[in-house]
Image 1 (spheres, helix red, strand yellow):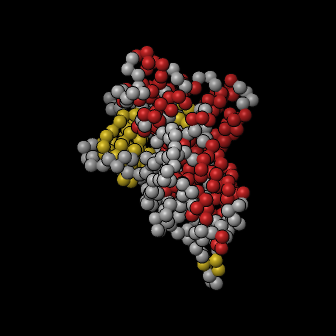
Image 2 (cartoon, helix red, strand yellow; image 1 turned 90 degrees about the vertical axis):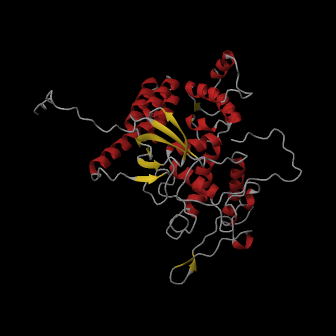
Image 3 (spheres, rainbow, N blue to C red; image 1 turned 60 degrees about the horizontal axis):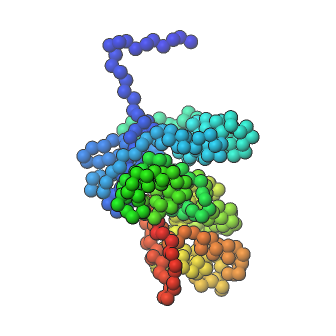
Length: 412
């Protein structure tokens, strides 16, 4: 193999396009409260274009309320790596964080680091096998991908990334934000909150009664556990910092949604290609391409919590879950408060609908009712844009007359 000839001294240096990892990241907060973050592709007086999961999203000055400069991905990774230290469990969680951002090679190196500490660490060994396959698939897809045109980059106006599936899926950042809102602090979840985030939060909310004035008081907060810091963040309603919290554990309601509800009837009945996952799904379309994937789980959750029927009734009744159309439409029609409409299909127009629950006394019906009750109250309004669906938002839950509630939970 011949040695490449070095460039001549008179040659001008070649300027390569910076990668997303190298670009400055911006947090764009729109006037309607929506928030988007990503590396800057280009910026001018007329527009700002950022990359969201590889999709270039354009924003104009009349849309934007304010901008905040964020650290590049690799800088965030460096700080998170310092925070997890030599704990193999935390290192694996960091690897999963990288995996969710499609940094498979870097995630693999972290898994290797965990195995150097504990050679028989089960989660690390399992993740290593998965990452090996993802690295191979990524290499093959890049090898076989058609050449992309230089000028026509995929570009849309303000919205989350689409994956190419029939139903657009949420990004890792959007999923993590839902986890933050739904985190049960009493469960002592594993979190990563950097020292810089805490300092910025205290500075931004200085003057609040819960924020100490003295240096000693602030140092005491910096020494608190991540769970205690998140509790303070909720009490301050410092929503601008929620996206900087990394949730390492799956909130319990989403474990139940995946294992008990999703695999029992939601994916296997409602989201099938013959029902709300197919071409004749109607207004309610659920993702089913990768039924057990986290992206599918959270996307379907967001769809269901935001969906309203044609008459304005929310799909989920948070005050009386057993009356939720989501559950009632799965009952036998003669036992339902809101029977599922007939779905004629085929030449004979035979009804394609199939029941999910025999009655409200079914264990699966009671399980689904308990799941709805287990989610955080009062219900948060996630600052997440999900472009394909623009349903009416459910009305805010109203307390029953005369009901007394001591120490109501913090509105997140």
